[in-house]
Length: 364
Length: 203
Image (tube, rainbow over all chains, first blue to last red; front, top):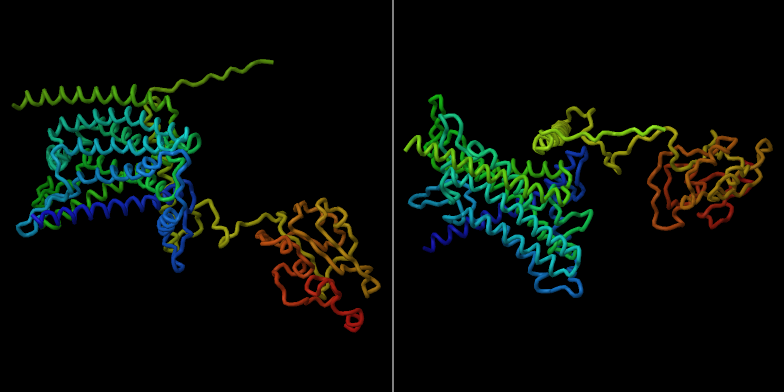
């Protein structure tokens, strides 16, 4: 009992450590990647003992600045809610990571460890619930600040969340129908099969349309460009106008956490999570007949590496999209969500259902 | 007068789909990203140094090349014997629209040279860098070609250059003592004349 608890605590600590560090690194990636895209050098002037480390220390400088800055609560603001809002944001963004499986079962003596903090049966529902709860932080921040621009940002965020979460949910419905499970660990395992021995049965292969809808809607969910209307700096600044210091930093962190979350979800749902092509628990089995046997530890490590790699690639892609596209206009955003993504997602579900029915009849 | 009607082009089906356009945009940004990433890594290993990876200059370490006609901080040109070429004609002080030049002329011991500047101060806090002084000078005694751009100072006084700094662009305040051979009025000697006519005559 105590052993299981310790393992869970260690896993939770590991996930928190990895995710928070990755989010911190995102500030660096954001600076450097945008610099490279725009033919610049990027932040590189925060030396420690003369070492600049390509500007990696800017994240530390940011953190020190955020923590030592004055924390201003505007007069007339609801102090409790104003303080609570950033915590809500970060909490729900962090807690959602519990359901993400980042590796297969690790066998250690008689211990079998699921590399996943919480093996929830309806993990997908849980993740989406937590992502939706995240908007509470945003709307509370807007409401509690007692600032018209802040509440406008909060309302925009709410409207945006509602219109995109439906498309998001319906898009994922197709994946659930194909693999027949909402348990993320099982879902990843189901993606381990091969079609004809060559093409892995990943979500992107079975549900390509759902993938594009998912990525679009999920980007809207992260409130970053091109869907950053809740925080549009050039027009309303957004729900965190009245925040300073680390409270603002927490909203900033939430943005990055949600980006990572979306990258994790895209990996898990559409790119086979920790699956490595041609790798089964026994070892590599190539379609031309070759086989390489690997031990359980190597197999699990390869899986974790594969998962991390995919998440990094997605984070890169999202960052690239963020620095490529300009912001949508608000009516364009709404019409894209309701008139574009939602109907296409519904059609995708119907087509998937029909195809599945024919498959079921063909092979009873 | 005819009115030219500009037809607004209808978006094609592919353009309305967003996705192909987004991908073409991503192609452009990715091209820049990977090109610059490759060049930066190559530079780390000392290769391909002649191709710049960034359009920006890392300013304090790396100066942008200046045009030859660029007007930077002034300097006073000197003769072979180290004395200022300036003859104290006051043309630059007269033409200066910002009135930032102060010249106090004195009689030169050499009868062929009428005057010389006892004092030549330029207040850079007032100067507008128009370059009129350079154009007005009949003796090619003042130029704006030092390439010095970093003219920041903590006080208005520090923005005032006297003849020491103008004759030696490498010199920066504070100076130890007045090092000019000619008798000069400068802030280092509290506005008093340094040296005397006799010492000049001997030399």
